[in-house]
Image 1 (cartoon, rainbow, N blue to C red):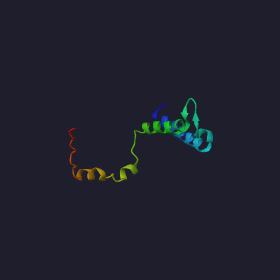
Image 2: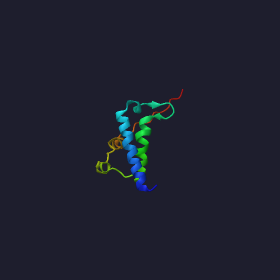
Image 3: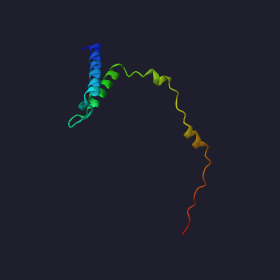
Image 4: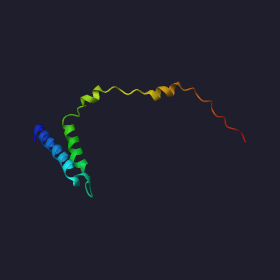
Length: 89
């Protein structure tokens, strides 16, 4: 089986699994032996297909601005509290 054959097979598995989850209510449920069915019908084929393609990062993720760490900067400016001295009994 070549890489192109596997790509086509995984694309079909993702498509059929997504259609099954959307159209068949029983496919959205939980099976006693398999567990949560959408994971096996959509999630696992999708992750295998993503790994076959070399884990590409979506273009949207590259365009999003980086989060600023405002809280971390705020913590650094806080005045230090006086240490609590232990009382002798």
